[in-house]
Each structure stands twice: as C-alpha cells, then as structure tokens.
Amino acid sequence: MSKQIPKFKSEEEEREFWGTHDSTEYINWSKGKRVTFSNLKPSVKKISLRLPEAMLEELKLLANKRDVPYQSLLKIFLAERIEKELATH
Image (cartoon, rainbow, N blue to C red; front, top):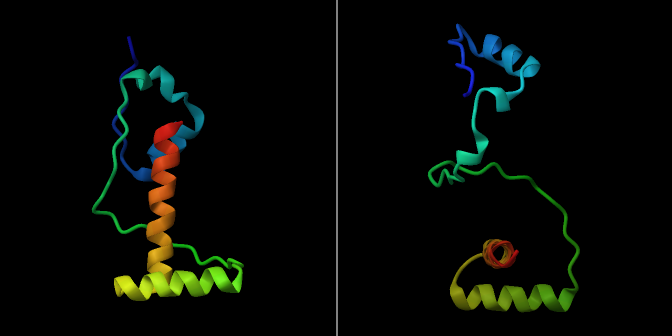
C-alpha cells in the first residue's frame, strides 16, 4: 500500500518534500495514464536549420499552394513524421 501524500502549505514546501522523497513510495506509477494538454500554448524555441536551397524553394512552393507560411508547413511536416515514428516504435 502506498504512503499518504502530506498536505503542503506552499509550493516551496512541496518542492522540498519531493526533492528528498521517492515518489514510488506514494504513487503507483504503473496505473498512470499518458495525457495531452491540448489547450496549453506550447513553448517554442528558435533554432537555426541549414537546408539545401533547392529544398527550401520546394518547401516554399508547397506552402504557397496551401496558402500557409513555409515555416508553418515545415512544422506540420515535422509533427506528422514525429507522430508516425512514435506510433511505429
């Protein structure tokens, strides 16, 4: 049986508690379920990406056909591929 999680007076108190205690003594992680918080605005990070000029031009052509910015189209392509790869593994 799991231990009872104490009531905390503040986030700082809770942070200190979990910094010194093993959560597996309090939570049965085998019963956990993966959830997605779809309404949260994802944090973004700017990166630099080097692409062959021809590939970039083709991406811009495809984006223009869909009437979306090429950077948005690239994010769509990446998201679709990541989802596919994760589903197969």
